[in-house]
Structure formats: structure tokens, C-alpha cells
Image (tube, rainbow, N blue to C red; front, side):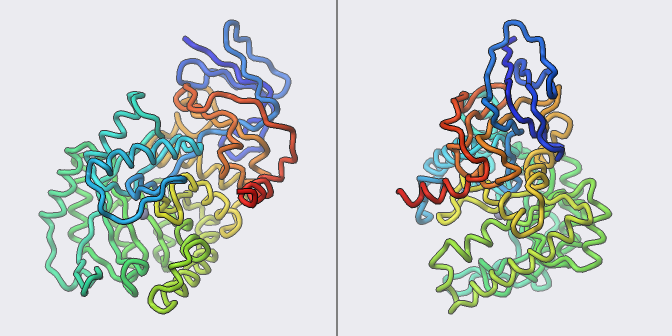
Length: 434
Ligand SMILES: [Zn+2]
């Protein structure tokens, strides 16, 4: 079995503990041994990689991936006129970009085509295409949507009869295609149709049918849910992942806490931030009302999420990356926002993207930590990410990317010794030079 001994590194093992100097032995696709401090691993015949004092971390995991949104760093997708064949190739490319940026795992929050996404997942797993480990998702099922002129808006579930059979058939069909999870858009969304985030789009009886069908077929349920009523409804019906989770009331927060062992929340702050700071066109929408709404929401999330964090609810980075203004590849920005807006320590943000990432992937016990027996998804980072969480945003700082024991980016020497604090400064200087 091929063995690699990575020496002379500071190891952030994903548990949240402080990095420690040590070495790691990889055998085949798993971590075989971890040594601390002065301990040495006897590994005759192993290829030795000198980490040069850089930091070894588990690979990052994105909790709210949309490979099919299509825009990635260096390749912005304009318009919606692509054929399914083009979309498949674009999606395969965005998967590669995620891995280029250190994301070795991605939990999909909705695909443009379930057959395309499951095929991509399987080709990545088989080693034919580069990309993160992928949990494939259905397309995002809406309900109660209506056309209003050229725009789409929502009416709320009260304006239509329940369609229990339709919901059930959808879950079964998606499970048959082989998805890992099925996504329901359970509330409207102010950024799609003004003043609709509070509207609940499904009847309770429909989501109960979804739960039963998911249980029978072995798929997980994800919800797009902003309002307290929707959050409570999906919690009652055993949804596993809640995206956005913007306005839980006290009762909903208590319910989240009671279910914290089996529910994941991805607040999706990246897109919110981008709409405000990086998208010049956003300010023009609806005479500025859309922008004001985004600012209010960001302020609200900055108060709410630290509260949920203190209650022990699992919050994961993942921010709807894939639009022209927040292309795939920028995903690690969410880690920075967890620190600057939600009061996470860098170690907590990194733990959320690694250990909790392994949990949302359904791979707790073998993914997300650097520990004997765990899958060898590893990054060698030039600097100390606990002093500068932005280091992950620049792939030049990733000296090695290993997934499943194989190199995506083979080890390269540290370019030059430098201050571990200067990740942001370096990025800004580089942008300035371009
Ligand atoms: Zn999404």
C-alpha cells in the first residue's frame, strides 16, 4: 500500500483543539497514524513530505453547494440559455474549481438536474473527474408559485389544496434517480419575490408525506426556510438540514436546540453579504428596497446566529456560491463571515467546515478530522489559519490538496517565509497589482 509521511507540520485536527506540531502517516486513502510533538512514526518505505512548518488541516466541506448555479472563479455564467449538455459540463467544471480551492466535500442544496448530479457524484467517486465528495440533491421543489407579469411570486399554501400524492411521488422519483437528499423550498424568498420570505408554501400534511416517503426510500430532507412557522413545520417533519433559518421565534429556537443532535443549519450568509457589498446591480432593484432588506437581514443574522451557536445548534458555512458576484471558489469567505459577523473563533469556524462537515455528509467517524482511521482529505496551508481565517480564500496558500489519499495539488514548497498574519494583506496587494 502506498504510504506518505507528512512531517514538520502544525496539525489542526478538526476537533477545535489548538494546532500541535507533529506528523501524519497516510496509508492508502486513510490516515494511519498521527504523532504529536517529539514522537516519531516509524514508516519505512513511506514517501516523506516535509511540510516546512505549514499547517495541516482536514479538507473543507461546503454545506450549501449548488454546482449547477454555474459561475466559478474565472468563468462567470451570464444568462440562463444553456442546454442541459452545456450545464452538465459547466457543473463538472465547477466541481473541479471547488477542489482547487480546498473543498474536498460538498453537500448539495439543490441541483439543476438530479440525474446529472448523481452521475457527476459517481464519476468523481470513481476517480474519473476531479471534484469534492458530493452528496447529490434533487432539484429544489417549489409550491404555491405563481407568475406575476414576467416575475415569479408566491401565494402561500392556503391558496391551494394539498397535493400529498405529488409530494410523495417527487420524493420517490428522486430517490429512484439516486439522490442523497431531497430539497423543498418551504418559504418564499424576498430576494426572488419581494415580501415573500414569511410565506409558507407547503401544507403540513404534504411535508408529513415527504417525511414518510423519505423514510421509506432512505433519502434525507433539506428545507429552504426563512419564517418561524416554516422552521417549526420542517422540524416537526424530521427535516435534516435547514437552509437560511432566518426568523426562528423562541419556540422554534427551543425546538432547534432539542433536535441539535440530528439537525444542521446553514445560514447562507455569503450571498447575503455579496448582495450588499459586491453586487453593484443589487442596489438598483425595487428602488433600493431589496438592498435595505438585505442589510436588515444581515444585521438580524449577526444577532441571531451567535445565539443559536451558544445553544449548541450546529451551524455550518455554506453561502449559495455560484452566482456571477459570488462564484464557486469563493466559498471559504463564509468562514471569515462566521468569525467577523457571528462571533465564532477561527477554530470554531474551521471546525464547522471540517468536523461538522463530515457529520452533514453522513460520514461522522471517518470524515472531517485528522485522526487514525479517517479518510485522508488534507490541506497543507501556508500560514496559521487560526490567526488568519482568510488564508483559505487564496489557493496560492494551499501548498497541498489531498483527497482520498491522492494528490489533487501535490506538495510544493512554501514560496518564502512570511508573517502568518498577512493573508488578507497579501490578497489585497495581489488584487491591486492585477
Ligand atoms: Zn441555496
